[in-house]
Length: 329
Image 1 (tube, rainbow, N blue to C red):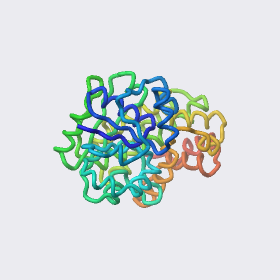
Image 2 (image 1 turned 60 degrees about the vertical axis):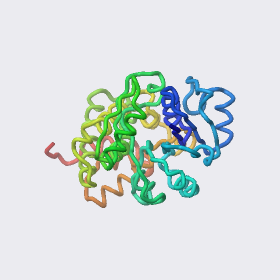
Image 3 (image 1 turned 90 degrees about the vertical axis):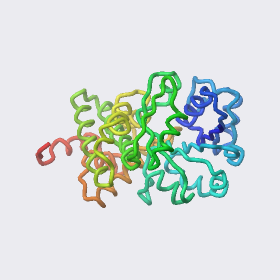
């Protein structure tokens, strides 16, 4: 079986290594030839996943036809901001592959407010697709640290197939039918992770972090339910689980981004110089708009958005959150 991974970021690279170690024929595609050549030369992805050897038997390419030729599964590990553009440009190749698709990107498209699997179906038609999400920081997975994730698909048989493909000794994969909830949890938790990072950067403690996580989960759940997700999903791996990992791990890039803001660095400068994609920044924009559409109050999300894009002081955002009108929990 051949599995193609499109996107040579940290997560795409980690999954390619995991799948190769399971004995699959694996290709890893990157949009920039110089990045692929750098991986070939160094034997590792120093840019996005330093310190982990990339097996020489993984096919590394910047030619998408070569990556997808003969693939049974195509894994979409392209950042959410660029997914539509990449698959639209390569629509013919992807459709003709007749492969099943697995989306592992976490985000909401800013203009359309669509989830990643919705974009894939809109562009590629009636494809077989699942989404894989959950608390899975790439370096930890690559170190073999026990990890549990969830794969969701409307087709239970395909979900089980994908689970079997990705499941490994230290990588447990559950299944779920709630595609909406799994994708929304994976996207929205990054916004809360930025809030958690800002709190740490300001020097606040465990009390503050607990408040951010619990109230952040409430925001995620209320909006997710309004959009058609299941409450149980938001309490599970792709919701609460992913939020905990991203908010407490020093290796979570959205948390690190927020922490730098809390320490006084300008969001726009951090975004411009970041090698890694800060998904939570762009998701905050989409989440604010979705909150308006579904008439759901999202105070933490709104304040994160204001700090990132409206030049609001992090301390002022905290003060406004703390002095809001009292409410029942």
